[in-house]
Length: 281
Image (cartoon, rainbow, N blue to C red; front, side, top):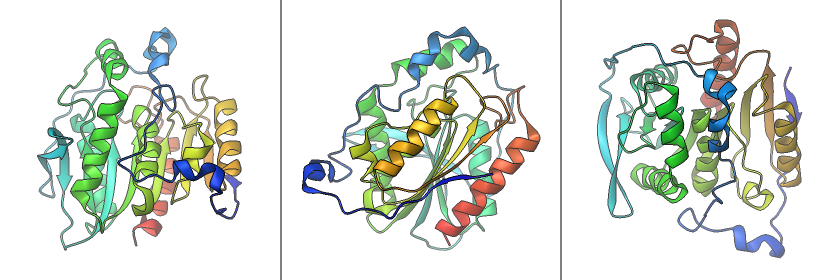
């Protein structure tokens, strides 16, 4: 059953006015919402067996593109709405990178959202894709916070100032989904995070323009204590969080993972897609 944290959004006080920045001014500390510390834990690495082979062929014209990010280029997988739309879903990869499994999941969301939402899966590793836990851990650890933010901001700029943006991500990408929602400012309309480390900074959480749906696992890293702290921080920030902790292992929703839990994944996806349909209706 959902545990709900409901509180009317409070007016930001002058004491926190310094955090009412635009997306281009917001900066995250490298240790806030960062999962790289888990890489040294063999148990965490073992929760991520190498993904099963898969080659994605788009049914809906999805294609790799490049977007501008602070004078550099970044890669992304774009599926355009079949009709012109200012509605967007940003999809954030697991620690493997923007592999074909993420592209497939992006298309699942696209189809179930009625092909009426632009879906953009951002490449947060600048072309690197891991096929084993060792490389994945190295890529996640070496990802620089300023580059990650530049890519997210590049996605926001690409969508345009009129865009209404929701986000979803898993593990490493679950953390990024929350950060993306913060960076999106008033353009944010929804945020889904699967078993990702939450941002702890209450002042930053106060700037959210959307509620958050958290889909978590029974695990020692993004633990019940971490999630309950997140809930308390969201309440203190005057924000709304709905969440569920599934009786399943970390990465339970990844069908390319040998620890995939079809029942839990199906229930989590139903919650996610119903939430996104409401936010992007």
